[in-house]
Amino acid sequence: MLQQENFISHLVELRTRLLRSIVSFVVVFFVLMIYPGASFIFDILAQPIQGTLPEGSSLIATGVVAPFMVPVKLTGLVAFVLALPMIFYQIWAFVAPGLYQHEKKLALPLIVSSTLLFLLGVAFCHFIVFGKVFTYINSFAPSSITPMPDIEAYLNFVLTMFIAFGLTFEVPIVVLVLVYFGIVERDKLQSIRGYVIVGAFVVAAIVTPPDVFSQFFLAIPICLLYEVGLLVSRFIKRKENCE
Image (cartoon, rainbow, N blue to C red; front, side):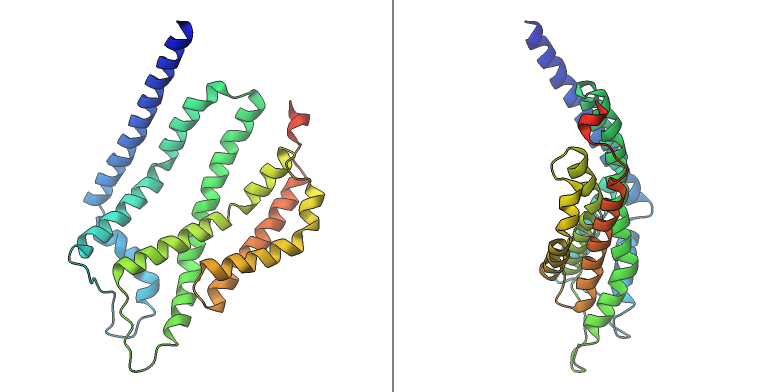
């Protein structure tokens, strides 16, 4: 009977945490829709490619509802990102009572650092990579063609690149977790450095557009961040030494 009551209380708490997360997302979404507005947010996202298009050219919308749905979809994604601190806090508040002390000490820094690194990867892609990549791609357009990308295709491309670069910047976290929990020895990770470099360029060739700039911009950070993870892992203690 006691176990059933505990189970029900956990379900009630889970529902409460989920509702708070959803409400925080909805509130942020409606605030962004009011100010600065979905159109303004999309204009910010479009700046990297707008600056590389020929004079008189711009993004176009081929779908009937695309001019409305694409900016709204983007605003929803931005709202989700801005609501992540509250969402992560609700997740943390739900699982924290069941964690050991050393796990509590590790979980919160991991959540914060992984979130910041993901956002840093997105910012790196938006402010540094896109301008050079779009300039390079448009330079190959024949004089008989006027590049006018569709906004829906552009959003899908941008989101794919954001996810790729965001995950790339999580490499140090992955290295630290592998070493901390003793899944892979640090010396082993050092010894496979060459395979990681090759794998980085293979992943970059698959994920990014077929141009050398975007492939290097993705592969080089993977290699550098892998080295950062190895460097920082020298100063952490494995799990069994922390208990």
